[in-house]
Length: 315
Image (cartoon, rainbow, N blue to C red):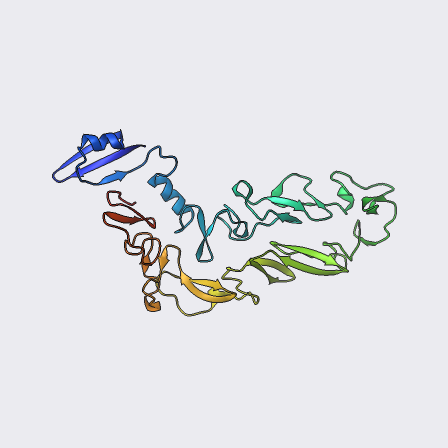
């Protein structure tokens, strides 16, 4: 590893610029001192890149992100994979998302029955309704002229002169199964982050594992994470609006469907005294490095929750 290394001695300073670590140590005859690693070609594990990762994920270790007061794996689809702007489960309109993170990101797996991704843009899901006249049965097929209606034909859809079902605007729909007209024209059956279905004109909504259904009012629904402090448990309670005052480094939490108090990422209540909150910094405490009671050995320091040789200066 090529790095910029500074060697500090009592009464004198020797500077080795852009020298190999072993060469600089040999030059200094292995004298005791302080080694500062400021950067270099180390395969992406330099202090600078670690700091960037830490900043991007809050106080959480590299490869994780902060969600609802805890650190979660960035390759977890139930928390939006590597998207640092959300902690919601991967979801797409009128489609099923992969329950994994293909290439590190959320991925669209299949379109719901009767829908297609005609514009090949996963960001708007499966946007084309194959039961409507503008994309009847397949992408790009439009009904017009003497056959203006898109109707069920032999297990699919085709253009017809008449509408044997219910006419909703310019579309011929089955209000018993239509997600956009469930039970009647304009009665949309939707759920953010989940799967809606219309059976015999009645809308139902299904959420993925580790999520639960919450109403947003006005007929809108969404599937919230079981850890979501703003929608905790089956009653979707907002833990942030209730509860006792928080002590140092404490955060609201949703555990087992009930509001609770936990520690912010990187902190812990090692003395089991709720009065002083989460008093221990697991990223730097040498007696509790990474976990309560994990004592770094002799000639070691705690740097980013890991015990390191004491000649390393943790930035």
